[in-house]
Image 1: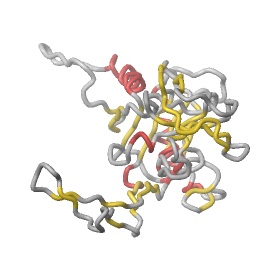
Image 2: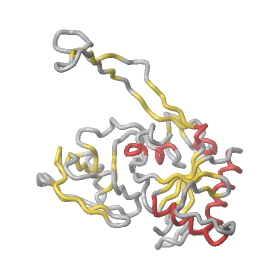
Image 3: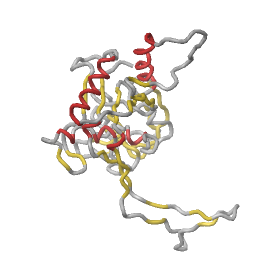
Image 4: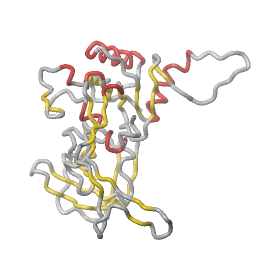
Length: 275
């Protein structure tokens, strides 16, 4: 599911829905975006308060470094305005042109798919602060996972069928269950293999933000394709193009696609979990 949903877009920090925002220039109170940004990637930096004035436009990333929860970048083209903590990073030219992401779909306030979430529990995801409002992240506990699953079931009547996180959090889930593993005499199991928690598969995704663990019911997600579909035409007006080195024709199809969750309450995530 997540490969088809183009993970780089789906897991981006996009609280406004389709805005294309990758993340804040500083990641306080926001989801980090490790592995989404990369060297030579062209980005815009915009100020949401002006509104959306460009502080840097089509600026390639000349250097990038990652820590566990923070990404630091250098731009090869100097910014045209003063950067601020509330500025957002966007793929160059892509603001308001990205699909809605996982985190957009399961927020608890605002609107989604032009429907207000107010007074509609089934239109709100189940979001839990593992630190319960504390300023520091906390170690993962099995009851955190079970409480999140229970809350989703109580709200929606459905059970998540995938737990998704980055590799470090998958290891944390594994470490919860490792002491209980028993081996047959003469048998040895090396590595994590296929990991489940309470019979729910745990999927590791390199684009999923650190300190977060997602809970997904895949039956509630749909790949929506706009009916306005057309073929790109070449200079001579045809849609078939001949390859110069082979007896082969190619064509390019243009379509508008988005990802829709029709029951956000069957999904949710934990945040504030120590890496």
